[in-house]
Length: 216
Image (cartoon, rainbow, N blue to C red):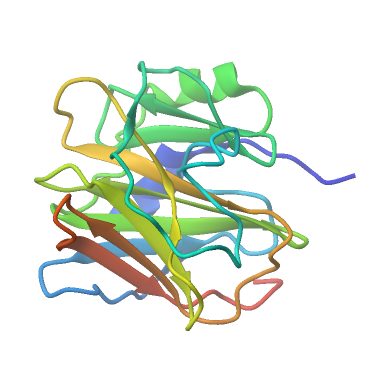
């Protein structure tokens, strides 16, 4: 039986913001883009994301080429959203880019995250990471952009660009989250690229990171 653990995104994010923890070195895909990335290794943990119940918003790797998306789904604060593989994501109004991903005890994760600062990623950038459990991979992350992305995509190496699901809070919070359920795809061995686009197809922000080897 697979072990399922909850993750409070703010806990990991504070380490990233402070330049410590297990953050990986990353390169923006465009000059203004800045980003942070984390690979949580062989454990099923993640820093952010929404949706396996919305197959129209996310396809499994390898998948079909990404198509245009209408933008993030607006969700209520604290509302649990199914993002695949039994995980739930929730966005919090407290703190900065504060959210949780949990496989169990979602309510407890939210209560703990209320007192955390959140991610605090740089303006016009993306954070990202992945949770790995056997061959199941769940990609998650947050965006903080001046323009709300129309879509966010992932690409592994030279593979197809696939669509991620997106969430944001009501109003104009200036941030949101994304997720991609890649159950059965196996741990990626090549560079992971995440790109946020506006409605005209221009790049708003990008992230590229190398997945760490299994067991690390």
